[in-house]
Length: 284
Length: 284
Image (tube, rainbow over all chains, first blue to last red):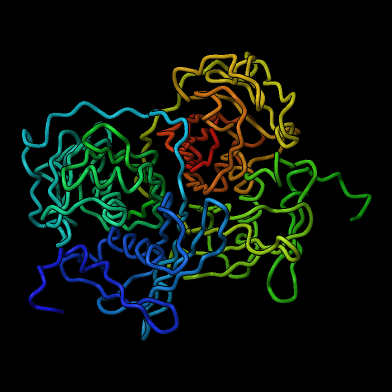
């Protein structure tokens, strides 16, 4: 790295990919994005999207991304392969895999992405943004005792934060569960960074697991699969800049080890920039 | 086929797969499931899920399915390939592709599925089922002028049906758009068929495109990608039997050629059996 260059953002460091002669990409896990086990899933999603974005022949901008967390990603290097499955007039489908070599290696992530060349059409809002106090009127949520990656986000919770009595693993439940698993919060990268598609893909996975709201005790959880739809173009993301987004998260059903979690990410101008869904494993 | 056997259901005929010596599967499009172009996407999703279900070494039951509609599927035979990307202690990830040979062929569908061996845990409902009159009190929705596959479902709409003035392509809009794109309806296979995972995967795609509610004029549309999460086990689906499910469908944002559509499928006992999300292309 050129030491005279401006210091890069931790997020850009984490999603950086080096091209390999065979068309694949080499990346590496970043200590600042560590989760309980392996890297924060949002950064893994951003790496998968970034690999497709960088691939030759890529058409337009992302409209959909699905990331399947098939196995653990160990600290160290990984290899990303991309393949354009089909290119149509205005859409293009990619499949992406992230794998590691050595003992315990193999495919850790299988993903797919749809890109599209949008053109202006009749458009309309349907979901509505909740009415929430400005970020400046809310306190920044504590990340004490939480995984390293959470310190890379500034989160200000208007509804549905974790109880102060939130119990660690093994401790008895000391708080009652919340009446519902809905959260409203302002969130942005910290330090601030202008919004783009990889950052939005990562933010979509930044909401804490809904099971912790309804059953306030730490328990092992893991995202099985994550799907994000992008409802904005690059110009709209650039216009949002580095200001906080409003995030909404909820759940559908907790059943025998798996629950679904949905999120919306709203620009501060009131436009829905992305909606995201995931299925999460939990032990209870 | 043995002519003395009981007549099979059209759905089972449509998702039937013959094993090939190399481990792949051969299927074929079914005229009773024809859409505007190619087969109904719900049946394609069911074929992808069925191929993974039938594959040797498959673990447990499906918990998630993503189907990317990459290109057109022509009338005739297709080949389905499945690969177990990773098998963990309680989960297993599959990737699936559906391809055709010949001119215009290639990969038409890329898909992924997660299977899991569930065990009993703390569980809880979070989303709530809308209060809707019983199916018997509602009229069956007309399928006049609609694609062939719609006749394979009995749908009774309690909220958010298509306007009687719904305009065909090229005709001017004769009706105002609905205030929102929310539908509530009872739906089941016709003729009735006991519920299982492939049938549920198909039902998740049976809701008409939300753009037709807000902008009541026929326009070309196509699902780009569909993700369904299963919140029930085989026993719960068997208990539902062939009775109607309650479906809920809504949208998030219509923007420059693409919108997101979400659906819930409720058992008549009030349990959420599946939630489903898709990104849809529209021309307007």
